[in-house]
Image (cartoon, rainbow, N blue to C red; front, top):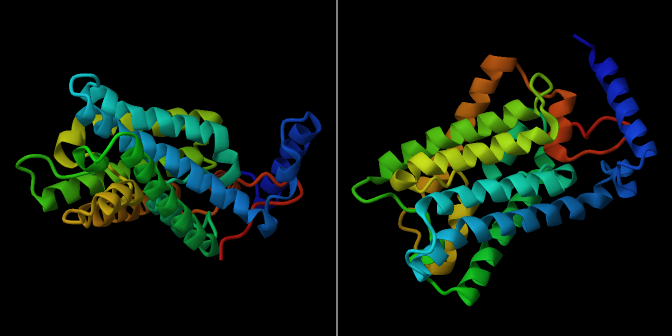
Length: 276
């Protein structure tokens, strides 16, 4: 296995070659410069806005126009949206779109803790903005796509389902980002596919949120927080389980490939920022 110094040297060579070929954007060459932090924050806001617009919008539109959208379409749409977001802006911010993903990367020493507050604020803002747009365009149908436990399902059952679903999602994200199993842009297929698959079989139980901010926006705009704790505690617990599983599978985090995937770092002159 190559030493950390060799990995850095190889990464520099690869990115420099790509820059020479015109693949890398000019602003990306100094992306570890925190003066570009606003780009990352905007990317998280924009990406989360698009995700929630689709994830909450599909059930809202389905309720507004009964019989038009199938349940399969409703639960598959967010996965396709996440796939597109990762492909078009993953290199900018890492396309977390989810506070528990940011938390998991930070716990794996692959994302700086100092960036989490700004990422979280952007994700919350994107979710709320998407729900306000839905309210204006479609109306407050189906609680604006709020995630709720299914009929006859208790909060604890739904919370446990969210924990296990999120464990799988975060494991997929951490695994495809790591140097041991990096699959490049194909990670978008893995993550988007997992979200669609989880929704197809589990949405009648918990709504398959796996993302606190996806659930927060509809809860805030519709004014109903009765079940929100399920979608806060469940995903957080699932992310912690995924981090534990990653340690067992691959040992401590902090590898260069995962850091670049988590941070969206494009700097050919040095490695990604060290988490603090």
